[in-house]
Length: 109
Length: 114
Image (cartoon, rainbow over all chains, first blue to last red; front, side):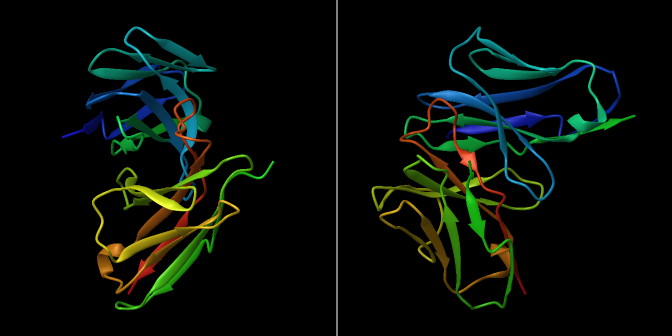
């Protein structure tokens, strides 16, 4: 069965304290791995798509990497405005997105 | 450029009632998917519409049904509401299969069943 597991469930960081979020997955026919950011009461906002092992993408303080079984979202020198829930999703062979439960990130000033 | 628009933003219904949620996709998008997001969980796939037909469906009962109109907008209908149907319902649109950018999500409809 296709499955996505994210860890940790919650993460508290001090402003400027770098860290990583993990997303492990099992899926048949991976068509892409997606990272989204979700603010309270809002829909998910697209961050990155990764397609193959070894691929990396960056955007401001965020960097996403992909291996054959997991992906990492690295946050460098985070700011309070980076506080949100970060969702990982895989697109399966039928093109639907399967989401993990997310990591709730809180960055304190 | 308007993104995905959903209405209403909030809704309170009684058990056993029926509800209709509406979605207008992002301009240029032709595929609409619906997701249910319970509190503290990731979104769960309900179904996807393309060319006015249901293309695929997740593990949701027949009480959940939908429709896509010629202008690509979509409705989600839920009959015989249960307390467990309380959730944030998200509409997502894409052009075709959405492989490059996943899907663009709306802000959702918060449904509370009492």
